[in-house]
Length: 433
Ligand code: URA
Image 1 (cartoon, helix red, strand yellow):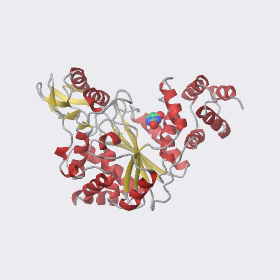
Image 2 (cartoon, protein in one colour; image 1 turned 45 degrees about the horizontal axis):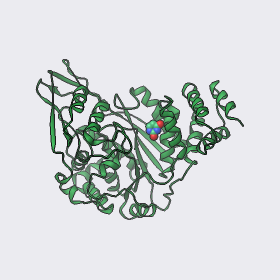
Image 3 (cartoon, protein in one colour; image 1 turned 120 degrees about the vertical axis):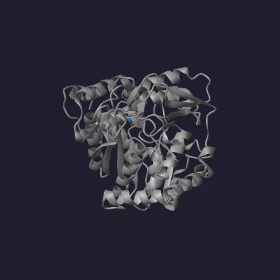
Image 4 (cartoon, helix red, strand yellow; image 1 turned 180 degrees about the horizontal axis):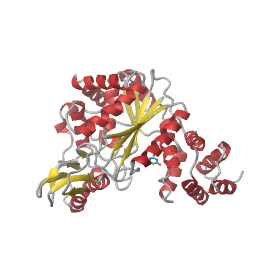
């Protein structure tokens, strides 16, 4: 077998065999095939695509390139959840305690944020003492004992994906459906859960800008999951504005606490309850989505979901008093209102620009080494559909940095305000199962 023949075969639009796919993935991970040849192959895949079987084999080859987490010692059906990346996306903070409050084990592995999107781990670390570096034994123990645990990505999971993703990033081959689908699913499969709910974001702030594109990606991921024995559902959700009203870290935790009390933004509660309901059905705790939703709303109303968050914080070394008193979470010294310069209706809040503005205020990282200011972020006063008058506050910048002008300009620019009333797009756009 030779890499040149494999590149040539894909260039001509032919399907690769399992042997060829493993040869490429293993050869590249072990440094035996150089970047320039894999770059050429990635570009051939970008243009010629991969069929379902090839995409599934590519996923498995990446899973088998590194460690795989064994969750078999956790009783019950383990359901994972993954978001394709949004701004203001604190859904994991809400669904972990929600799903655990139904008695379904949640063993969650999450990432940090980079660039304009935030990460669940960073948000949790805004709570004093919260420890995301659990050993695998402690992680599994906590799930068995308390029904939930969360860790940062540990071990040598999918090293092939890490290398391939870095190369895709510099060869303009990120936005290829088989490559995105296999990359995301390889990490989910390697982290060991039995079933997966995918939150596929759609809109200007997401990878997939249109519903049609998002459906194709969702279908590819569901097909990989099912083909590999993991019951998988994809919920397509709106990202034409940030989710909820808070973008940052500590302020997002405060918003998640409010949502667990049933308070706050309708879009955030709706998306979180929907994702949690699918997790509950896939976790085999309920036969119907309606029953799952009813139980979830009950656990919000009677406070048991919020108590679960308190427990999660306590068992991971954090200060649970901050959940009861969210005002004690970090707050910024400076708050700057961003003022509308015209009258009209909010049509769009470009999530990517809000995310970038939040990063400039200290809430995110431009490079992996940057240190996050947990107090920094943006609070959205106006959401899509709201009427605004010149002089109204659109959003408020929260920061400890004196130099916030670039962030101010970006946040103002993110708001699309037009004269005519805005069309309201549903929060849940489709479900692929
Ligand atoms: N997220 C991933 O993990 N991989 C991709 O290819 C795109 C988004």
